[in-house]
Length: 284
DNA sequence: CGCTTTTGACCGGCGC
DNA sequence: GCGCCGGTCAAAAGCG
Ligand SMILES: [Zn+2]
Image (tube, rainbow, N blue to C red; front, side, top):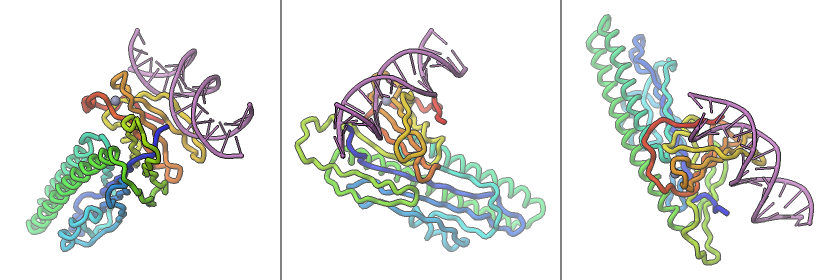
């Protein structure tokens, strides 16, 4: 009944960081790792994976040249306080951006704490270095935020356009997590009278299970099924914000990587997005 | 009480 | 037709 998914998106960005190490006077390693999967048939898409850690200052300009090279320096080896930021592109309506802001604030706070300690027994030179470092962090976060906004906008645009147009040779892409190939070809072998009745189908991969449900809409679960060749059951949801909204949602953990959720949206909402409140349901 | 989730029954498409 | 499989229904239970 429903056609194959027309697009697929997965984005994970995690940043591990910590406080300025007063012993070695460097920042603990900040590691940014992004992972983008292919998106749509209609463009040359992103399919990169990067996991790099660079040494200090001189890489700063370079590392910003590409989003999958976003890293911050450093030498110190304490990883303890790390921040994990998980963004998924879909209809998240800015909660991710909020998270980035929180990260920003946390960074500032940690700098502040460090600065206070430093004031006690360290020279102002070190203080200055820390200020510089902090400035770089701030800039990096601003860039991350900017890039993410842009990327997000692009993804949403592509989701829409790929749902509307059909020309297509979707290349199958194998990603690191999960090798499910994307079947996006829309062969119009026979003329479709009801072209428009084709439900929009969007497939999304999300790493953070918590974000699976908080996509800005309210969902009512109406079924669960065990699917062949997958140890995890698939859950079926219907949009419960408006009683006649036709949108459905399928959620299922990836068979290969249980930390990855595969979410399939089907249809289009016939109402506005509910107010950005808290999620109403959860899943086990 | 009004909403959810749970869970087995049911149903329709498809391959044999 | 039969059985498998994915999707849905709906009765019952859960929950604030
Ligand atoms: Zn809806």
